[in-house]
Length: 377
Image 1 (cartoon, rainbow, N blue to C red):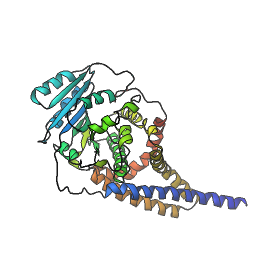
Image 2 (cartoon, rainbow, N blue to C red):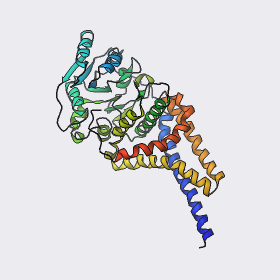
Image 3 (cartoon, rainbow, N blue to C red):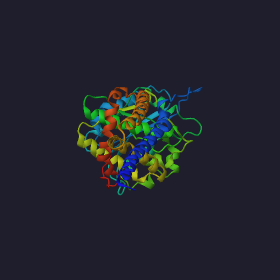
Image 4 (cartoon, rainbow, N blue to C red):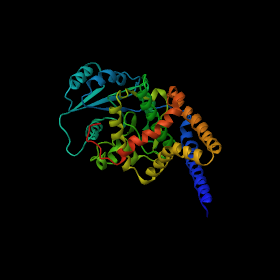
């Protein structure tokens, strides 16, 4: 084989690799993400109002509670419910603020914890204590820095329960604010939600987010709570759901009234540290989901480099044709998914944000191997 033939084969390989990467991406978009893009909530013949225990953990969150807790307490839910706030060793005015709220809202229950649990980092210990104090079977979890998007949040989340359902996954969005960082954070949050909600709709639930998550108290007790992950700083939402969720016991709620909203970080450094903690749990996923999520991430990461190599060294017209196929697919399904999750203002920027994901993976991939910091959240 002469040098010219070797060169031709090498250039052809770059195009074949690019086509294979694109094909895998298209399979994910049409086979998985289209579940969210074209999802339609089935009308319920009978709506129920189950007793609900809302559980919120707080540590030095007086400012956030003053701003967000009224949104939880003023829910339009006439059936039996309670709001449990676990004050975990706060050094600010959280205790006094909660006592003032209690004077007005009799359905507010306060659990004050004044010591740490040795060997249990993160918020799994206070969350476990809040669940232990809960009076009702359906638990609805959120964070102190979150506010329900509507006064019908409790109703919408609990209405997904029917015989056999034990877990309900919701969407925890971020407030829309001006600036580049806000768009990057919201796009990453949308991108993550597009994955875990779509996989759940495809019968492959693998995680939830603690900002908006519901499951049954009995399910928590039957699985011995967080005992298998108590040694990890995180995982009280994604790893726990990863362990207990199945095709049959999990539902999703994609209704703007059922969303929660949080304030996004305002500094890049704070966001990087937050995401580093979140991604440190990915290494504990099952082999099946490591493969499924890893294959998607790797092909997304390699898409643009392989496009450049294919266009430069093989044939730019053919490479451009393959790129356009993926571009149209991604643009259409991203728009539909953003429409479902009330993030349509990001759509004009989606192609730039998609390119940004290459650099995003470069920044955060090391978190999969680093030892996580022992922080509370």
